[in-house]
Amino acid sequence: MEIKLVKKVLAAHDALAGEIRAELSQKRIYCVNIMSSPGAGKTTLLERTLAGLAGELRAGVIEGDITTTNDADRIARYGTPVAQINTEPFGGDCHVGANFVKTALGELPLDSLDLLIIENVGNLVCPAEFDLGEDDKVVVFSITEGEDKPLKYPLMFRKSSACVVNKLDLAPHLDVDTQTIRANVENVNPKIRIFQLSAKTGEGLDPWLDWLRERVKAKRG
Amino acid sequence: MEIKLVKKVLAAHDALAGEIRAELSQKRIYCVNIMSSPGAGKTTLLERTLAGLAGELRAGVIEGDITTTNDADRIARYGTPVAQINTEPFGGDCHVGANFVKTALGELPLDSLDLLIIENVGNLVCPAEFDLGEDDKVVVFSITEGEDKPLKYPLMFRKSSACVVNKLDLAPHLDVDTQTIRANVENVNPKIRIFQLSAKTGEGLDPWLDWLRERVKAKRG
Figure 1 (cartoon, each protein chain N blue to C red):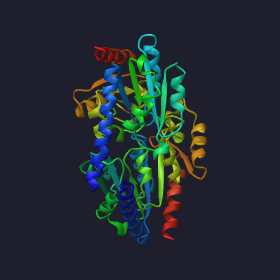
Figure 2 (figure 1 turned 60 degrees about the vertical axis):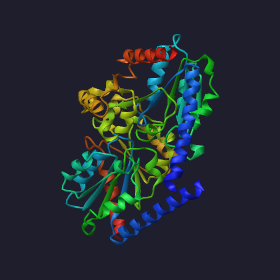
Figure 3 (figure 1 turned 90 degrees about the vertical axis):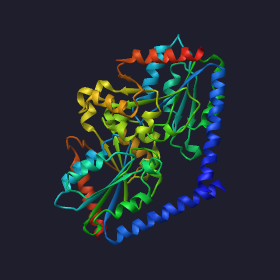
Figure 4 (figure 1 turned 135 degrees about the vertical axis):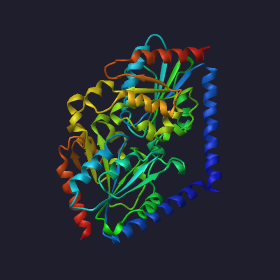
């Protein structure tokens, strides 16, 4: 009985993700779901990305957090339409679910967007398990977390189209080898695109922006 | 029906945690459950802790990981009895459950232990929700994750008796204020004990070791 029930709940979730995917496709909005551990630099990467694409692509953001509106407040400063999801009133969910995205879509000006970015709850495990109707999942990985994390949390890296290896500016102060990180990421997902950058300094940002531009263009058709 | 079922599963889990607590109490073993984001430095803290207490307290370790035995291999070098839990064969659970702990206890020489340390799966959300029969939960928080994380992930900090603020050696290279971190931790849990240290260099380790010594002594009675 238990397994049947879990399957039913997941089937309903995936059906909702399918509805979101259809709606975004119909409007030709490219959607990326950004995931990472807490504090890996998702919001800083978003700020850099929005600044880098300003005047070129029209972006909207869905901010997923258990509680607080800290991240949405940071994003709103860029004049970007942003919908905040707080999962705390719903049991403090450890990930953004399709139900939250569906609600958030109603708060965004979809007819004037090219790009929708979902910033997930900081968690290197659970968010990887849920389809949100996005075109791509992207994992942001901070080099401060250590070389072995792709091997220890493989699902997130397997499900992602791209991996942003972040906080490169701290490399001189850490005992980590960025080549080993790259090898470990590719070990669990040989097809993943890897971008090494520092969202803080902006170093290495351009290839990441180019990748997003290409994805948005492909979606527009 | 769904809510009833979830309650039933949780009740079974808590009953098992109660059994673990009774067994450890009977053997007067103090048990601490160490939790954090991935890469916050739990294993390095464990290595320092085991070295610092060697010849004084007899420690055993339960290593919880989704996959790999990397951490258990590191701990075994200290001659410490260690039981590895991998959650991947069971759906890749994002936290250590009481069922895993119960199994792991059978692999440890309980009659010759004073202290049992559970290193949880790296996740700042889900592990906080589960009672493992431990005496204390401890959250390790790396300053690289940014000042606001206690406010964004409050449950983990509320449930913990102590917070180890780690990677102090990186403070000169980050835009974070350790006083703000301390204030944010105390904001969500005014009673929590805070230890600021660097597990890498060993700076600030002694108050943490003293706290553990006191807890073990209190459990022995």
